[in-house]
Image 1 (tube, rainbow, N blue to C red):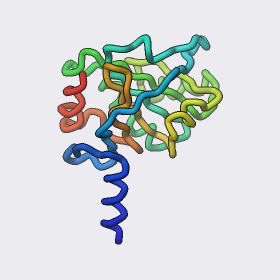
Image 2: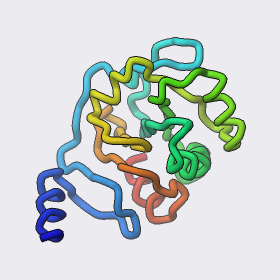
Image 3: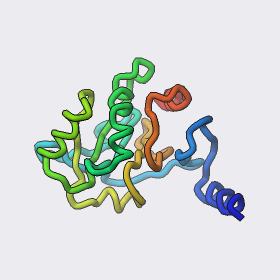
Length: 169
């Protein structure tokens, strides 16, 4: 019965391929398009992903209280500067409705230096992307479409993951 449920889940989610050793990634056969993916930087300036077309984007949804977020954030930081990925932009979007001081402390405590925190105060993106929990990472191709998502935490330095994601870079 468990196998049947997993099989149905994979078929209905349009999984096209698997990445060896990474179980919590969903790869879409048909990429998903969203309009007006907007969030805020530390200065409350709007960021629209349309401005980053031509780059591989990782929208990582997280919160300071999330233990799996704490585990994966350092590897996500290293992904931003991975020499095999020259056109990648990471947006770590806090959906915990946490203040800037708490978020900045988190970045200092976990030595996050290669990207900035972003915010989704009204949690509109959490609804738009139908997030079921954190961390969740939405992978956006150079055309601005979601081609995959990671549900839960992973090691972003994993060799299999890096080799797979560089095909989209």
